[in-house]
Amino acid sequence: MPAKLSEREKKNKGTAQRCRAREARSPRVIRREMRDLRLVIKDMVFNVKLARKCIRVDGTLIEVLITNSNGEFEKSRKLNPSFKIQMDAMTALKSLNRQMDFLSEELDAAEAKQKKTEEFSEFRV
Image 1 (spheres, rainbow, N blue to C red):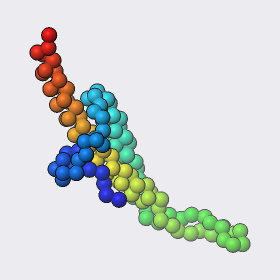
Image 2 (cartoon, rainbow, N blue to C red):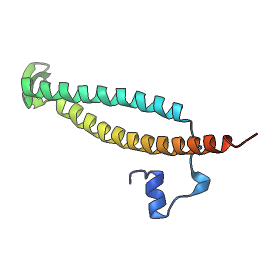
Image 3 (spheres, rainbow, N blue to C red):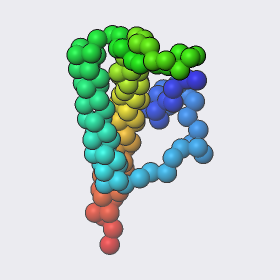
Image 4 (cartoon, one colour):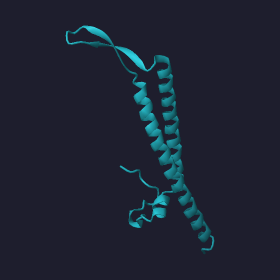
């Protein structure tokens, strides 16, 4: 599935549909969402660091106890689950950074629109 395009990318490609464009939000709402997103990105980076640390300490393979068909415990080696955590966190980071780009474009457009309306409100009686 292809990634979603930003409004700027759609306009450059010529595929933007005005009827489907999202309603403009205020810069205040966008900034709040960006602040929350920065916190999520910060947490995700922390998860990646912890996963890397766990891999360095425990190694690539870890020993686990499993039961065989007779119900006896045996030691077995399996891949460290931190690899999956790290992989998922990196994928999420990529998605979150793309979302941050979308929000920054939306903020630029909202600020430009707000500045334009303030400019014209100056001449109203």
